[in-house]
Image 1 (cartoon, rainbow over the protein chains, first blue to last red):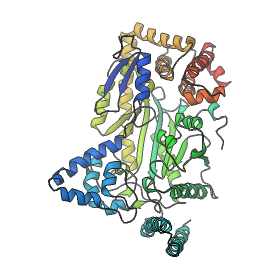
Image 2 (image 1 turned 120 degrees about the vertical axis):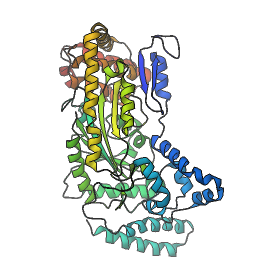
Image 3 (image 1 turned 180 degrees about the vertical axis):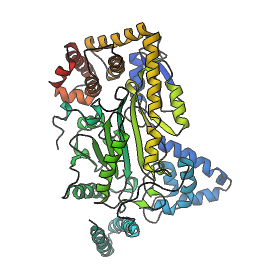
Image 4 (image 1 turned 30 degrees about the vertical axis):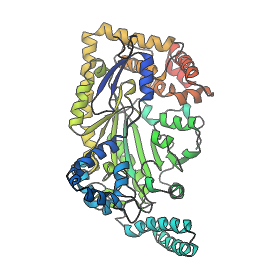
Length: 172
Length: 358
């Protein structure tokens, strides 16, 4: 068999699984090496998700204002916008699952065929996660006030953070 | 733990034992977990990442230690050593190449690894040789309980374990079985098998995970969805289909033995001969030829080599392992020569297994 890219003897028979369709390739050692080394690994999860999101948002496209409003919606805890999530395919913090709950619900159903967890649960029960989420917001705020050189506010925030962290340590 | 001398040892998943180990290389389960009090990696500051790394390390190292783990600071490793850990499947390619504070905790047998600051704060994985998903789940479930007793996971009563990517939410679990399917490739039936797997929500990937090529006829079969099913259901989803895939591969091997014996024997012998006698050889060609030899051993066409030896060669002929074994930094051309020399030494002598241990 001849190589598909040049006329040399094909000794590599590759099945490429990275695209939507399977691709069978028959290549000589040189072309195979080039192919294997230059192929970039696409982020399959992000690709799939942005595809699903695009479908989901299609009906919204008639009202560009709605889409703009949705895109600029920002999580108060971590500050990620829905637009940024759409672009990256990654969420910013655990609270996003609550804050963007309405938008994520159809996405989850589309991806998983379900929206209810039935598997393992943490043994010590679901503790008060609100204070944990609060820590994310406080640390972010702290960084901002330090950047603004508001040290009085920063020291207040530091005390608040230490207090919650102290409470959290009791579980160990 | 140092990485010194690790190249001479064999990771759990390469032992070449366990059920169906002529076709199933290894069984792997990974869990994605995040700490409740930090943003996901994408929104982490450098300080957040450093704090996550030190918090996890300190809490898991605190006595009493149900599981003894050695932490390796991945950010401080040079590129060669990071690549080395990727080749051993202890860290992902993404973890090797990303930036910022990050670490991996490994147990003595290299049967489990826990990546800190990968796509999620924690990625725990357990690997077993052969087809042993029940054993892998039992092991990783215990490690997960241990970690959970030391840190607070991000968890939602309706959505389960919360992950950076919504495709992993719920159980956060990926079940993967690494299968060697050379006969299905040769008989050109592999695509048909993949299509039927995709129809039942399973994913097929190459040896080193997402987006990698199917090197050496190795394929990872894993679950796609993570929410709305129990861990056991997800394990069964993969575990129930693997025997069917094995059966297809065995049928294809029988066909080759019965109908194409001359061609098959020729291919296996040529592969073995090339590996023994090449003067320079790329890692891709090595994988390709080792795959043929591995099948040849399983079909009784090669008698003087054992499966664990070949499994070792798959790993030890890869770029970082080769350089660690020869204790020299080598460029691509030099590696191709050294790889040929190494194969020559390992395969030329009678009883490759004895030479392997030196």
